[in-house]
Length: 263
Image (cartoon, rainbow, N blue to C red; front, side, top):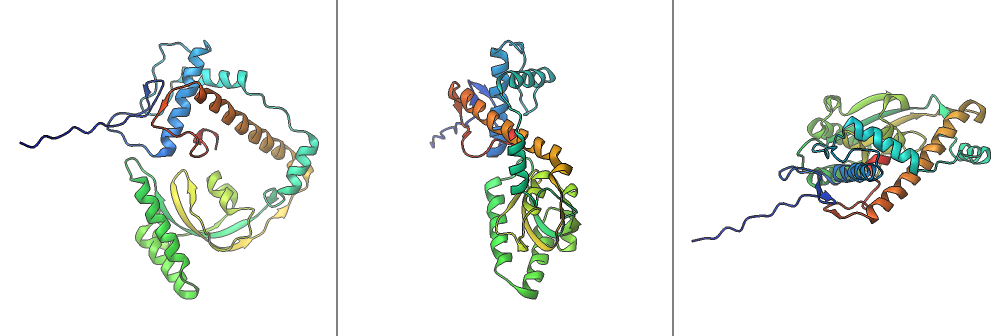
């Protein structure tokens, strides 16, 4: 008689609090996000800012009470100094392309959507293979191959149009997508996959229309906000590392990449 050994399913956890159901499969980014949220929730409880009866999240969504408590916790523990005038001027001078007005790009893409239950490793492999394939052609053949791949593989309705998104400005895009497209000189198929909240993109910039640089006086407020956010991100990462060092974490590698909480 054949003896079947049961398979033990691993569940990621923070101090023994499960981050997902036994039969739920999450990609690494979602696991890190849940782990960071649970780290902060438990820290809020320890600080007396949240009742110990607050239930841990079972779907990645915190209770309203937990969200408010975490906000208070971060206000109390993150030191965010005001950027100096000199630092703001340097940042503006070094990022002229970012602080320009009217830049547009003519873009097409192939979207590999990350959806619930998708095999992220297999999805990335397909995206990387497609990126390599479309970069192996030039001229008319490159145009045909990209359009063909978009029509066959893209999870975006634009696939029916060869992947064309037309002319875009930064305000037309998700921030993480815009960051990869604007303020650069690249034209052609980008040599890397572009990550966004929608999934993985193979992107080709067909044309660019440069924007007009804006003087510091016109964008000073945006510069200050950008530097504040940069400082906040650094402080939050350090605080999360501190909490993680005092916590038993199983099944999650918090150092593998930037946590989605601070992207």
